[in-house]
Every structure is written in C-alpha cells, then in structure tokens.
Amino acid sequence: MAQDLFKKIISHCKEYGFIFQSSEIYDGLSAVYDYGQFGVELKNNLVKYWWDAVVYLNEDVVGLDSAIFMHPKVWEASGHVSAFNDPLIDNKDSQKRYRADMLVEDYLEKQEAKINKEIEKAAKRFGDSFDEEKFRTTNPRVINLQKKVDSLREKFVNALEKDDLDQLKQIIVDCDIADPETGSKNWTDVRKFNLMFETQLGSISEEATKLYLRPETAQGIFLNFLNVQKSGRMKIPFGIAQTGKAFRNEIVARQFIFRMREFEQMEMEFFIRPGEENKWFEYWKEARMNWYKALGFDESKLRFHDHEKLAHYAEAATDIQFEFPFGFKEIEGIHSRTDFDLGQQQKFSGKKLQYFDSELNESYVPYVIETSMGLDRLFLMILTASYCEEEIEKESGKTDERVVLRIPAFLAPVKLAILPLVNKDGLPEIAREIRDDLKFNFNCHYEEKDSIGRRYRRQDAIGTPFCITVDHQTIQDNTVTIRYRDTMNQERVPVNELNDIIQDKISLKKILGKLNK
Ligand code: ATP
Image (cartoon, rainbow, N blue to C red):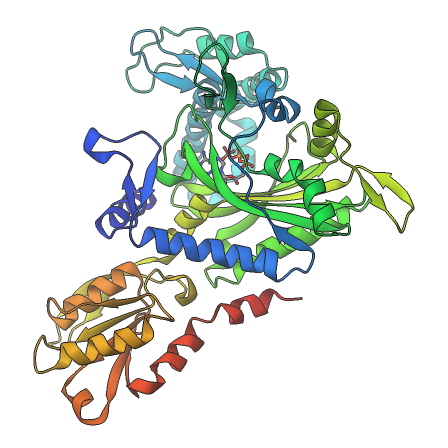
C-alpha cells in the first residue's frame, strides 16, 4: 500500500513537471535528479519559508553564501577525510556493490520478522486467551531465534563501534548472507569507502591540488565565523545560516530524492557561550519542530528521534523525522557540537577563531548548536503529505477521480490559474488582461486549451490553490469566479478585488506570525 503510494508520487513528479531523472536520454545518472518547471518553484518557496523564519525573524541570525570549493585542509580538520566513511563490500560474481552494514541490518530485520510471524500464528491459534509475553518467554523456537538475534546485534554494534571491518565480514559469512539480487555468496573483504567526491584545482596535473566537493555546507560557516562576527559586529549568541549544494558519493542510493549524490542543505550554526548549550539545544529543538507544524499537516507524522550513538563531535543530537511511505526517516538533525569544529579549524589553520566576550571580560572558542536539514527531503515530505486521490461527484451524478496536491497555498508552485471559459467571444483577451495585471505579484498561469473541467483537474494535480474563470458575465459586470482547490467551491468576485483576496490567502506573514515569539 505505502510502496504503491510512493510509486505514484514518483510518477506524478515526472508527469507533472516536478522532478526528472538527470540525463534521462542517456538512461539517467543514478541518484541525481533535476527539478522541473513546478519543482523549482516549490523548492524556491521552501527556501524562502526557511530563510525568512530563520534569518528574518531572528534579530541575531544572518545569512551567508560560501563557496563549494574549500581548502583541502578544512576536511582534514573537520574529520571528514579520516572518518566520513561507509563500509563497502563487493560481490565477486555479480560485481554489485553494497553497504556491508546495510546487508547485516536487513538480515537482522528478516530474523525479527520470523519471530513476529511465529507470534502472529500463535495469536491466531490461541485467540483471546493469547498472552504474548508468556509466549515469547516459553516457546523454544522463539527463545532460540531471539537469542541468536540478540547475540548477533551485539557483535554487529561492537564491530561498528570499533570500526572492525574483518569482524563485519565474518558476520556476513557466518550468517550466510547472500547478494540480494543474485544469491551469490562470493564476497570480497569489507573496505572503507570515503563519501567525499574528489576533484582537482589547476590545469597541470603535477601541480594540481586535490580538492573535495563539500559534503556539508556547515564548514563554510565555521570558516567565516570571525569574518561575519567582526564585519557585522555580532554579539554572542548569534547564528549564521546558509543554503546550498552538498555532495556525497552514497554507496547505495535508493528511495528517489531521499538519498541523492548531489543534494541541497539548509543549515544554521548558532554560536553560544560554553555552558549554555543545553538551554539553546532545547530552544532550537522546539523552534524547528514548530516550523514544521506551522505547515498544517498531520502532526502525528512528525517526531523527534534521539541519537543513541553520538558522532565524535556531538554532545547531544536529535533528528526530526517524518513518516514517509517507507517509514519514519530523518529530515533534519539538531546537534550540540561543542567547540569541536571551530577548535579543529583553529588548530589546523593556526589562526585564532575566538570571541572576546566583553561581559565576561574573557576570550573563548564559542560552542555551537547546529540545525541541519535536507531541502530535497523536505520537498519529498511536502509531496507525500499533500498527495490525495479523491472521488468526486460530477453534475451528471456520475463519479470521477481527481488527484490533488494539497500544498499549503503560500508554498504552491503556481498561485492562480486564469482560464477563459471558452476560447472566443473576447474572453481570452479579458483573461490575459487580468493576468498581465496580477503577474507582478503572483506566479500566474494562463490556459485556454481543453474543457474547463480538464483544466481544473490539471491545476489540482500541480497544487494550484485558485482558479479564476472568465465567462460571459465578466463582459457585463467585470466579475469572475474563483474556484478553491481544496473545497472545489466557487465564488463570484469583482476583478478588482482579486489581488487582495489572493494576497490574504497566500500570506507568508500569517504563517511566520505563528512562529514569532
Ligand atoms: P542519513 O543518516 O540519512 O544518511 P545523515 O545523518 O548522514 O543522514 P546529516 O549529515 O546529518 O545526515 O545531514 C543533514 C541533513 O542533510 C539530513 O538530515 C538530510 O536531510 C540531508 N541529507 C544528508 N544526506 C543526504 C542525501 N544523500 N540526499 C539527500 N539529503 C541528504
């Protein structure tokens, strides 16, 4: 069911110009996507919502746009050269490449599914008198399976924590794990694979410097911490926000735009006094969750998920997860990063990255709270939450189906469609005049082909919240109908009031007002 929905969303994205596979005519480039004519509008509107909420609403947050290329030492200092790795394994027969940890995870999930199946079977057999807890602790088969799963999980976590690649390979061999696509068990050793893309600066190969495409935007913020602080006369606490491309050579990239090799991040680093990290961690956790809730979707699909195993730099970390068709998954991470990043960049560059706190009369390397989200994952969340298939009744009494994207009006790619009822009698001319007037304020669409019903359906499918229809009455009294996407209700309104009506309904100010404290 859920997988069906996911497939439908993917094909809807292509059919209606939201997302295309990159280099499609060459059979595509794996895990790289292009945003089409409506996708780019939605994406821009999402960036604006984030930027206005994070930068404009907060007196103490400013923006930045740092370069993708940075000095290669940056990534040594940040730990990415030595530690931004995934364990990789190849199958010698099929030549297919996998993430070794994912193969074991999948195996563990299958074993757990076996246990659940035993329990389901027993529940059916015993009916109302079934006691699951008792069954789990007394049924020999279930006890045995559970013991195996627990001991394997312990070994697995141990191998990951110690970075023990031989142990990871041994688990794959001991569990008889086969290539999921071919069944072959002819594996290579497990190797570490660094996720950063490399390139070169300079034209003469001997003199060229190895560079990396940034795997996160955050380091560009850390490098500019003092530049921004001094030139903007910023006082701690303050934040720097930026949006931009990041690149990761993901080993297995499935799930459409959820895991891409080239993607976009929206990150904010908030610099604070050491010792105040708990207060600010809680503050940003709440602020960020409220930002999602203000979108008005079903809140039960959002949750926090605390990290069990913390990254080397983090003191505390939580994810904001959304329930995608393939389960609850991370959209944004909120991390308490201590003085790790500034401290490391200071050490490797030999340049001081400190702040003089005049109230305390001392200098220190500030602590940092980070909020880091993936724009593409947010995009997928909006589509998943907005996609609806509905049965509607036609005037003839028959039923019809419509697909509608219930995207919040302020985010919708096209705000209004202007449609002459028929393609004659001067109606197209009036419709174009209305468009020419409103185009300065909104992304408007003009369409005259096909029946009015079909045109409404098309606009529903791209999430246009308002359709303005020009009919013969317009010629007489200068009124038009405005049709609302979600209710399909129609209202007759004077042309000269359209601007104010729509302005009010797509107001970003109203949404931001909910977040303003
Ligand atoms: P995951 O565990 O899913 O790989 P991560 O923990 O490595 O993600 P972070 O390094 O915390 O992710 O990056 C911050 C955000 O960037 C994530 O919350 C996610 O929204 C986004 N992101 C990370 N990797 C990708 C990717 N390959 N494709 C799309 N978005 C990504």
